[in-house]
Length: 284
Image (cartoon, rainbow, N blue to C red; front, side, top):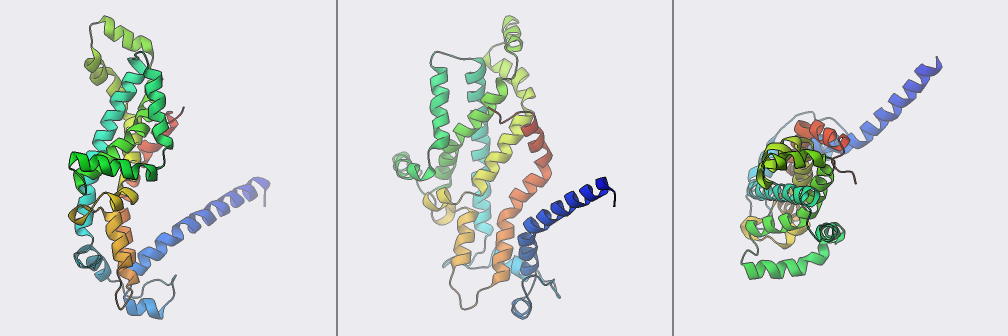
């Protein structure tokens, strides 16, 4: 075998090995979720389903017990939707404005403000639990979806500001100064010049924030209650609910339902995320 063909064979073999390694858990989850419990008990973990059924998916969505409630994951799923949409939009918008100011409209002490924001990236979330709970209590938004949105916006501003600030630093100051000479003000420059150039960093930030907030469990567990719990808490409750029979197919279907929005976002907008990274959206 020629040397080049041998090298290519080795590269492809290694790539296929790692692809199978990482996709194997997803295969097990998918196949288990469409098996009946009798087939799960009779077969092995890697066997392909003999009779495909979506009964476990239906039960996970609408009738599985999460604690004492048997409403499935549907209420938790829609709670997460009501949480993630405003939290992502608000934190991204505030990050864009902060980054625009800290890169193009610097003021005395702006570098100190930026440095203080960056310290927010290194503070463990566990440290924030008590002061955040007291703040939400004072504001009267504890244990509500509004409270969860507030927590994620506050904790997301540091990262979104960093993304936008580092991206806007690459925009030539001469472009902004020329717009000022033409009479454009702060918001007109932002809307007409800066924002149209921000598509790569916008996509990176939106995907980043969506993933962080949708998959969050800590804040959802601590700052929600009753009808405001997100899907990660619902999934945990479902998996830990004690019943006479452990329904692995329902658990697997529930886990896939919880992951579907994140998978969809990466499949639909993954190429924009890569373009944003390659354009230097998160460097610095």
